[in-house]
Image (cartoon, rainbow, N blue to C red; front, side, top):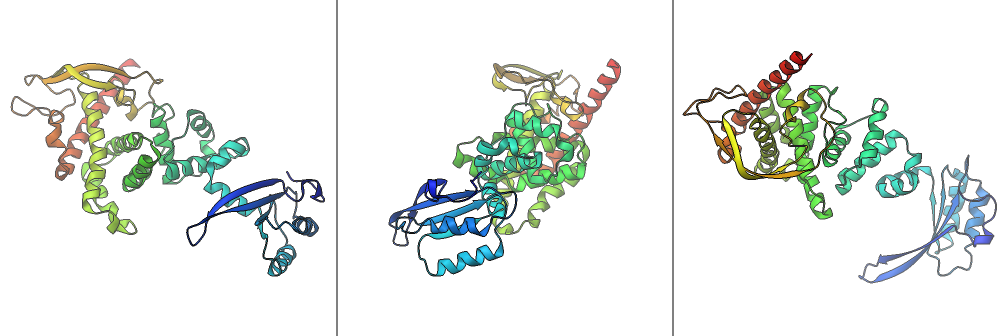
Length: 384
């Protein structure tokens, strides 16, 4: 909080710190800092600043004195400090007011979380979540997501913050326990997906450096692609994902090869999920033998529920051994027109993942999603 009056008992500082700085010639020198806290309800009085500075007289080893306050310093106080500094080489005086502190704390969200998380507003917690996500590839925890969910009506969002929330939900194991996308306009969902797609390399690069898995990010984008395929035609989505790069500043940083890798990574993820979910109750496809990681995000039994209702609580991952085969004489439960000569397109994964066939891939997925959603609605209607 900082005390009123003089600073003699602590010799002019509330905190003493040492920083090792690189000099122009490559050498490293140690700098000694003192920090004097002036917690106030109004502007810091000039006498408090002057006394703090004068207390440094004779401290030849002191390099920097910071006087920090939660309020402001008056212009006469700042003018006095400038005049004093002209005649004194050391220490360097720095006045940190509330605006300086807010700027520094926004650059170091870990400090906010460690020290002030209970004092943050919901909007402040959202900003911390966003900063940690994009600057450090760090996913939020469940309690924070639940807190923000309870205060969602009063929050102001942008695409970066919404994507940070959504991907953090994936990382926590259940993307629909809090259905953030339920009341988001479809055009906004499309733009959020585009924002995530063009920033895929940015996020994954930082995730690799931080030792964080980028899989939740790709899974989150696959979830958004599933939703927009339910709401838009395949042609519209195809034009969107091929044109969105042109609106980026410094577009030359994203050559066509990079763009192909980005969309292929997301498309492959969605194909895997739909393949596993669709073959779960398919009469044409049998299974046995191949290893498959069974997690909630890819859980076959309730995958299509995310198109309408929220999923149940998370379950532990399981692994089973299985392989797939196709019975061509049976009808496709997803409504595709197949026969003995035309098998399930999801079975031909290597062929369907050809990036040059994105438009046809999206069309196939669109048909499957549409039919599966109709079946789910009919099932719910019959239960009611």
